[in-house]
Image 1: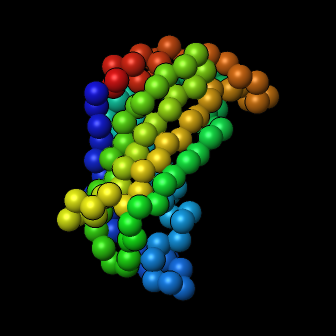
Image 2: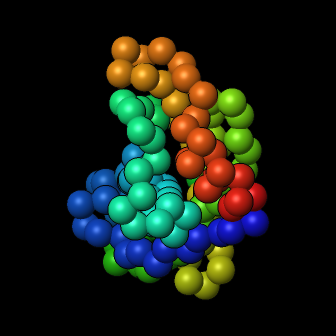
Image 3: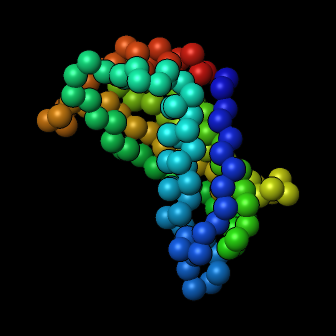
Length: 133
């Protein structure tokens, strides 16, 4: 399994009046780590599809276990948890640098065409995701 770990820092804009991160910040952190993972899986310049192809998120979940505050550093880990015909499930963990698990979650994305109809994942993407498992 290929697991990508992205070191990040809580920015002031990510916090709410409590001084903790706003719950939506975790989703942005997940996405930053996911994009970094995909850059390692797909060679630079190589298209993931020969035609129009979208990968919208169809399911998102997050469990908040411990707080993150400005300006703490943390590691966001991501890995491919499952691959379906048209979907991919990414799993995530956010841990402070002291090792404490703060957030765990997953995101399911499903391949679709420009009209929003479900399609099988393009072969290059599916191969890259399968190699990461």
